[in-house]
Length: 352
Image (cartoon, rainbow, N blue to C red):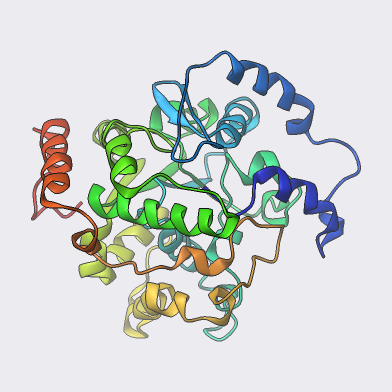
């Protein structure tokens, strides 16, 4: 799903400006990568959104190979602590925004308004993926900073590393209308493939596969349902949020998120409008217009497969209306009605 292959990026890491990040000895992941590839070779494969990137079935979900390698490594080696906090999401559902919010909330007392690192660096640098950064870039600073407690993942709930599920650490999950999720994924992938000079299947073909669950990280509706059931079983450990609801009225949800994380805003902070400052700093519009997230600028901590600007397209609610036919809308809405029936996820007035 990225504008260079991951192998290209990993191989270029030794040439990165921050060469001190890289050790001359092989990482734990590199020692085990052949074993992961041998496992993957035995699993079911299906054509992906491009010929170069087939989908591979593992644990009832579909994966791209490099992500699955990273997951297998994280399942074995990632060790969560009770103090860790996880930002969980399916791709293109508000991940970058939520990473910025969790970082700003957690670190608000450490920086002045004008010195917050989010003003100069992309949010993904501060909240590393356990299935990407942890295996492929283990020497980046944030992973080696014991004070860091923020991590992120696109992994379905049922396949999270056992250490996360058993550590009593908290997590926040955000979901989004499946129609906007699809459109954002397809346009993201289309731009990437255009840059590579390779061919992505048509929007109609990708939509058909998406409805069948053939997209990176698997069936989106099953994915949402997995986290929803986990939230119902463990409401004190999982905060369940909806992108559209947060976009409509962000401030109360930022307060709720901070309280859930153990960083609730004090009365004095509320009087000083600290909540409003966090909301403004982390807003889609503000982040998109920062110099750090414009043009071809890359993240600073490691080689990257995307320019920072790739994470900021529109962020709009309802953009699917510009892409999907009535028949496509009826199909995905019908699937959602069937999958989510009786869960509370279909209520338009729901606060989650």
